[in-house]
Image (cartoon, rainbow, N blue to C red; front, side):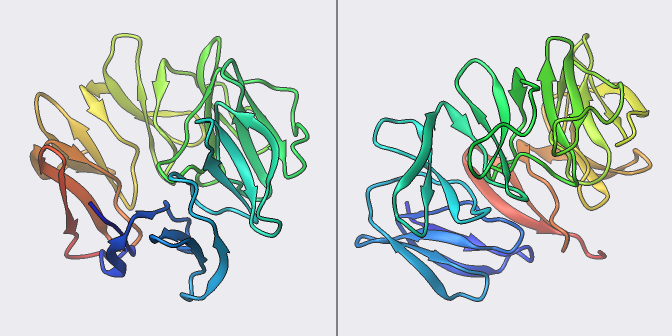
Length: 262
């Protein structure tokens, strides 16, 4: 029932001794909640801020403004300096990346800066958030409008003409997308289809591998679209830069696998 934090090698940064641990960013800054308070700890393990214990859910730190689910069950940004909320309440929002974030009023998503001024007039039907709350990966944001999902830069400008019924987040290599017929394939960051949809499910490539599903189980393929880890998992995440991935063989139970050669 307790939380901890593991690094990209799968080793413990903080063992499971906490009531809650926030998702982490690339530098592994984290919020750790104890019975007494919530502490903001930087990548060197130094406590930078101490917050009260009122909130149960956070997203990854991206600046001095951290997304918090408040007592109204809405998302709002908490200033680590003033310890007060700033800006409006949102139905959903992202962590800040390069001093920008995406926010949703429940009807559409918008790009804003740290003063909550719109960066672009473009509105999105949906924005794919990474599991830690960030909205962009490898300088690509995946978002949708009435024509489907597209690739955008951090200013909300379309990067190419590719569109799809559904897309996964970008993790740095080929991006998984779903066709109108329901199958999944892969597209590169320039919008060129590199594998037509053939899988029942797929996740984007990370560290040269992608989880794909045909039938009941997930396995992994390489960037030549060859199966390199046979289908055997109920669920699977993305490989870290050090070749570690969370997988599941039993419902609600995950464990690490690690590549022998990275």
